Figure 1 (cartoon, rainbow, N blue to C red):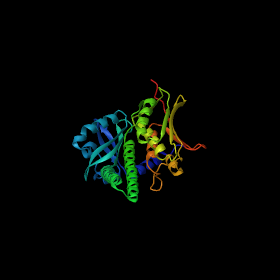
Figure 2 (cartoon, rainbow, N blue to C red; figure 1 turned 180 degrees about the vertical axis):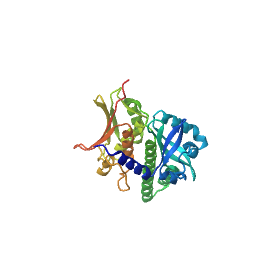
Figure 3 (cartoon, rainbow, N blue to C red; figure 1 turned 90 degrees about the vertical axis):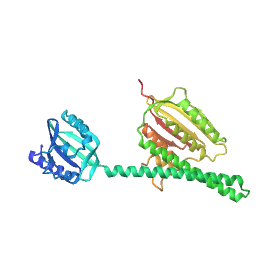
Figure 4 (cartoon, rainbow, N blue to C red; figure 1 turned 60 degrees about the vertical axis):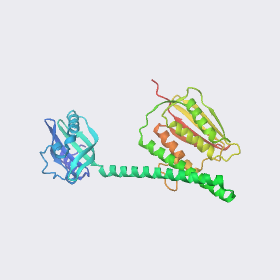
Length: 342
């Protein structure tokens, strides 16, 4: 059943007035938007009474002079029946502020303009970004001092108890340093748009293994990656593999630590890259990170390495699974997409 036109108009009017975002309805007169209606939020946001602005040119009222050309382009798109969406600057009674602007054409030469104020949110993000960068910088510098002093104590003391304490300090500082690096990488991954390209796995694995081996001389690292096997990824796939190998060896308490990297096509649309070890296995709490969307102070595992891997693999449109075979050890399986065929 179709609603009564008058009832529909009343519902629309109620919605129009109750929206917290500033909304105006306008008519394009010689390509310039002229206000024919404005909700109460428009008065609250821009400091102009909704009734007195009827008939006023919208751009002259709220668009800064330096942004008039940009606004004219939006108006042209509206005139052509196209919607608009952008972050813009507009004049309010408190000065210029930033808004998410959405322009919606309505019939010929009519449209709606919706403004959501995001000035405070953007400023808060900038302040937090500066705070994080300062904290990361200071943390890195202070940890370098701790590591240097701990190393000096280890090299110069003759007391076993003092050497053991300094060794523990050095180990803890190294873990904090790695945690800081992982957090910094995660921040970059979350803030960047992934640009995908074909990545051949054979040379990538060789490069990462060659980098890892000197740091873990007691571990045996092997690889079985067919030449020509490629996936759709980017340079951060190297970070993924290095993190998985580092985790597999660093936490391996076996008398003869072993890690194997393999790759194969599961089907034409899926390539599996797996890292297997003979260690004690990944704790259940840490495994849960790959399925939980939130890391809390009580659920962050021993580090951020696994979550970093998940973040990067998610940007590839891939998946991550952890298998604990009955024979022991752990297998981390990444399922990735092959490069798109030309």
